[in-house]
Length: 231
Image (tube, rainbow, N blue to C red):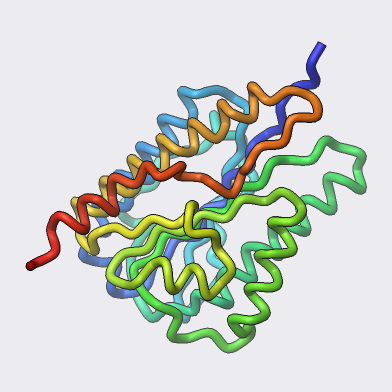
């Protein structure tokens, strides 16, 4: 009899800097759709949501909540402001996830499968604690432990920004910096998260999965963004 698949713990790092205001409504709706679709896919997941800007790099909205207990966001929960300390916020959420993993191990509990998703529309411009080299080291160390890192970026060169932080290109997706782009990006994120969870359920003992290839070249938000670029 196969051992049960691990609980997927989805850590979402959401940029709430001022420029996100152009897509705020769609971000809230897209996040709520993500939650509803993951709830429909089963109970074997948890979610943590952290928002960040230069006023607070680690605003914890909810922490390690079973997916079936996550409640929808309201517009009051996501009010863009400030600038983008992306490096510091990334380091902070990695630290939070690592501390929880250590606590589970110390208590003799089964490890979770960690999926860290960053959603942003801006390049790093306000960090004070960490350098890019330090974040790269953190990401690569945790990838070596089996974590998966995903980056959804609008209004910037997402591949360059994410790559400079150690993210794999297969797990990066650009999207158009507006409401329609955000809507497509969240739909894609939810679809790929469902696929990710189902792959884990099917894995056999001794089988190795490439958990760094999150989107598997299915990136509709990138296609949409490219189609709308002026010639």
